[in-house]
Image 1 (tube, rainbow, N blue to C red):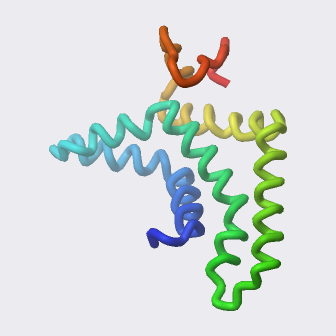
Image 2 (image 1 turned 120 degrees about the vertical axis):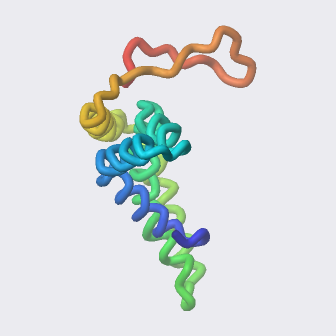
Length: 141
């Protein structure tokens, strides 16, 4: 992975999501063979919250992919870059407000979780929240 290229990250997350069950099986085998870090890594990627983050991050990075590639071109046109940036910002605003997009994304998450026998769960609610409100939710979705 190249640290400066968001397109590399988008591709890496897509590959990670596609190979999630294979990665979990491999980490399980490594843990059985005595690798001390493999069990912790396996538990981390089998967490429902991690699966939500994976699916959402992969989706968001796909929207910024064209802008990222445009900004790295040696023949960068500032007007074209500004226009593409406005398009990406408008897309982010639209997808943030469109509940149907979240429903589509959420359909992928339990499917990913089912393959690993992970039950959908919501984060615990903090008793005293100082910097933001607890979101009221009855279901993990």
